[in-house]
Length: 112
Image 1 (spheres, rainbow, N blue to C red):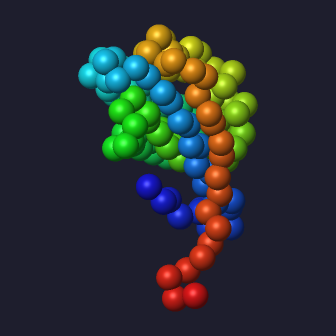
Image 2 (cartoon, rainbow, N blue to C red; image 1 turned 90 degrees about the horizontal axis):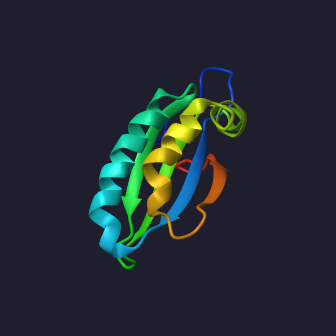
């Protein structure tokens, strides 16, 4: 899910959100995540969404969202009705607050 930076523009930012649900809710949660993913993809500045399920810890998920800039997530999306819509799909399944961090590509090349 690595999108190159626009010519002369900043590199995209990756939001990494760790979500924890009860393993018994996993099937319903996956359906909620699918609906939530569609919401995220409608957000301005969202370049892509990837959902990962932990192999060793049932009920642990990572949602990675690629944004054009940090502000497109922390300001624009966070102040939009889409945030409430996202939460309406997934929040009821969470057993703890998500742990959210933002990352930028380091820029290490394969031939380095």
